[in-house]
Image (tube, rainbow, N blue to C red; front, top):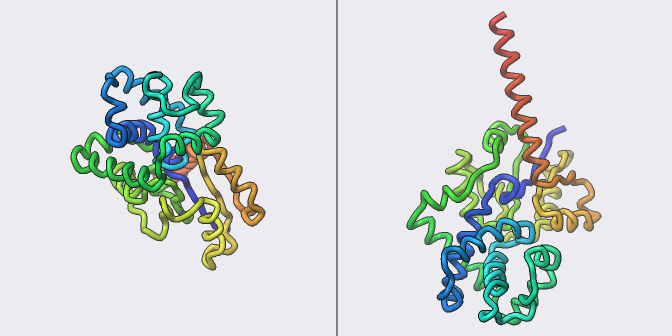
Length: 263
């Protein structure tokens, strides 16, 4: 029986925490310039560091802009416009983000689509003006590149990242070109719906289905859908472990084949 893998991108294939955090700060500076007038490099570095910790709550890129501003309000009381920042900790954000997010969106009068557009525009500008630094802020997890190249299974990327960034990173960092029909990026709908689409395709009938995701909340959403009971679910760290196991197996096979030739 053949296998189909639906893979998240950020946190599964690519460690994009640094690039995501830096892009979020750049975009936040554009969106709320007056708030950053008194922000020095030390505070900005602190924000970037905390964004690494807060990566598990990020579902879509615009979340990062909200988090940057919230962190800023936590550190600088004079800038506070939200009712949640006082006394809030990073741990508190991790535990209550789904409750906090709609509150600050309303209190800051922000629009989801506008933030998504700004986030993409800032990343595009960074790519255009300093491509080397942008690429350098991303890295593939060890073994992932070889696993993607050597995989005989059907591979799909299912991500909330924008497709053009995923295509560029796979091409530049992994040497892999993915066709548009194998990439479901931002705007293609919730991941649970994408999985339903994939399993209904005639060419996928009879395949073993695997979904790899780095957010536990997303996996829980899949579990809630009886229609998706046929999917095997994995957290991102497990997939990276399996990539290493796969590579060791492939290298062992190649080594034994070489030994047979020599004998």
